[in-house]
Image (cartoon, rainbow, N blue to C red; front, side, top):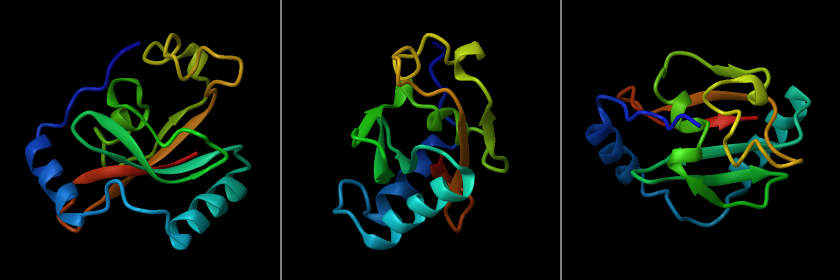
Length: 132
């Protein structure tokens, strides 16, 4: 497993994320609807709105996923925010050198496909992803 690097603008990115005051807040119907729609459009079994703080990936909304957060070290989205202008697509996580031995992949129900679109602040900082 290759842990995601931190962006060069990490301090500013975290400051912007904190300013949104959304981490650890209650579920909201609009976000829940968004992930259900994303999963439906993509034909994916699960989808999340994921926010990346200093140490973890926290799910503001999730569809078909029990977890509410994971370590940033194991997160796919931690990799996706490194290229804020592009959607990161992993066709087969079991064949990708960054993820093949990731605990989120190695279980029978583990992640196989991943696509994550960075969520950008108005200043252009990638604070998280919408992913399926």
